[in-house]
Each structure stands twice: as C-alpha cells, then as structure tokens.
Image (cartoon, rainbow, N blue to C red; front, side, top):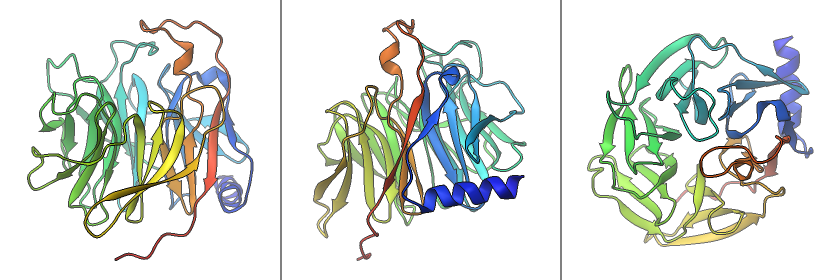
Length: 305
C-alpha cells in the first residue's frame, strides 16, 4: 500500500497537475514538508496539532508518539531521515498547555527521535519555522520574541543562537548550500544573513518585507510573501551579493500564503492558510474551509558560480 501511495504521489509531483486540498476538518494549515526518499508529503495543523501524510488521493492523520500543540514549520533532514516540526501555541491553537519547542520523528514510521523544548520558564517563545543545516543542526525561528534557536545533533533543549529582540519577527529561514550562512526573514525589516561562525552580527541582504516562508532553491531563495501583498518571488544574488527579485506568481485564494517545500522542480506551498478566520484573540469568526496546497513548476536551477 505504501509503495502504491508513493508511486501515485511521484506521478503527482512529476506531472502538471491541479493543486491539492486539505479537508476543512483540519482547520488552519501552516506548514508542509517533502521527503525525497519516501516520496511523502506532510502538512500540519495549527489548530489541533494534527500531522497529515498524503497517501494517493487523500490525507491520513499520523499517530505521533507524544502530544503536540499547534504544528507550524516543518522540514525533513534527508540524510538522517528525520522530520523536524516546530510545535507552538498561537491564538487558534486548542491545546494551550502542550509542548513548545522542536519535535523530531522518523520520516517513515513516526517513531520518536527527539524533543527539544524552549528554555525553561520562557513563556514568550513562539516556535515558527524550521531550517536544517548539512551537519544536522536544526534552526527554529521565534516570531513573537524575535530570536532564533538552534538544536545541535542530539540536543534536548533549544539554545538561543541570536538573542531575543535581534529581529522584530523572525519568520522563514534557509541555510546556504555550504552550511555557512543562515538566511532569516524579519517580517517587518527585510531579509537578513547570519554567518554561523559569528551569528550575533546579522546583515541585511534584501529590503523585502512581509516574507513568511523562505526556501533555498539551489543558490537562490524562494520567498512566500503575505505582508507586502500576496506573492511568491525568487531572490538571486550577484557576485557582489546584491539581490534581484523575480515574481513567480500571485497565489490563488483569499487567505495568506505561508510556508512551502521543494519537491524535485516543484514548489509546494500553503497558498490559502486560514489566519483570516481568526481575530486578534484567536477566536474564529467563520467556518473552516479547505486549504489549498499549491504546486508550482519551477524553472531549472541556474548554474552555480
């Protein structure tokens, strides 16, 4: 059955096909991840902490080995076969007392691999997006307090890589191909680059604001924007590090586009997250709807310099 589902999803990724939909019962979906080895697509619910796995033409709810809060950013470490997920609490999250931090499960069987909580007593932390380095280190952004955490291999607690307040609202992140730099999208200030050998000195590399999701594609970055219009762009850097942006598309749907992942030469991203259904206190003002998961064909990668 798993082989049939993987073959079906492989055909889905390889072909020019319609978008996917997550049923309304799962509510607000924020993040997705793709495992190239198993050919599996994952999605997570902010409202009830459900981890969903795409099998053929439907979504299956995975059974996780520990309780979660809302599921936000997620990413697969392809070398180690681990799915890392940011577990946090936002207004729409139903379980306010659940785990805040980073959880890791095997990408196939969902057995527990690790849990790394935010530092004890840190009630302001809001784990948001996740980025993985070649050495297995996992970075977690904090959209509420403006810091970035790191979980080095075998860690049991998140450590601050840069202090809270370094950013106003740290959102999407991406690690450079060589693992030396971490790109961090500050929602209201632009795109920053951190040299991981001296991470407390971030440098602005693009003035683009309103970036929620950030994904590396070769030596370029794909930014999913919902705070400066609704758009998906690709950011390239010349030999001097100057940025240029290419518009890829304007996402369909009334809601916010949020996070995404790369599957072969397709960008798969949440095109219609349902944050618009909730007021500032997290109270829903309308019924849940299906969530549109967009599949966008990408152009071949530019040649590396």
